[in-house]
Image (tube, rainbow, N blue to C red; front, side, top):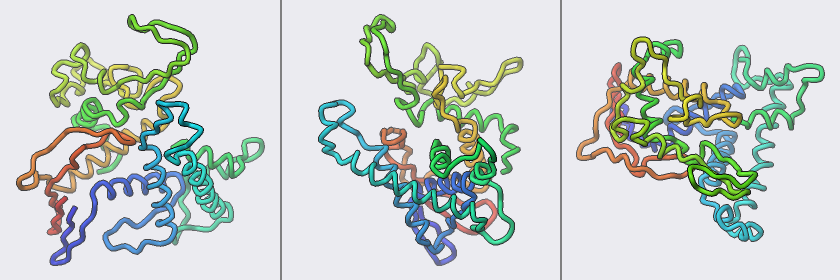
Length: 310
């Protein structure tokens, strides 16, 4: 992404900007901690430490662990995954413990009135419900106006259609362990087998979705007398957040946040295709399903002279 302010130009990686915006949103909600994301903003030691922890975590989560497919390799730790995890976990715990300690002693991160957040709520628990720092660390790492979202029916349908065609966790939504020998759709599944739901295949099955390869948000716009199509696990044709007892606990917040961000980006900027570039929607599976060729587009703020190209 190239951001131009008059004659001054800064270049940024779009995926990094989005990742940091998402992280900042989570840190603000959970810890009451806000980080400066502006172009040219000074980076303090805490931000650098957080960046290192997040980058290491993303790298480990997105790595293909061969010992999952060849169990006899687990004892050798040839890819150093277990070694890196054992080093990362205490670093994360120390980082969070410092934040909790500052909240406990009443220190403020920002000038002015302290804003209540999830950490403050946990600290405020009294009596038998009071949590230790270790307990709080475990809880905290489980992981346009927003009031306008409920009125943006078509935009919500667009987000759902994207989740259908490009589910972020196509094979990671659910995992189940067969505790006894069983038969599923004519296939023998022996006890001890771990099965995973292929949400990518289900969401493109013509038996459930007419014209499954066509991008049609209209399929999620409820007609008169119909109920809204929910993606929180009650309808197994599209359950990007899983279903049942192991469903993703932050599903409502995640869907609302994504819809709000998309609405804000469309409201604030004009989006145009980049010169000489076509949109490639092919995918690659890392930690989540991502575009194999990152999107290249021109972006122009609707209310200013600043030109942004990425």
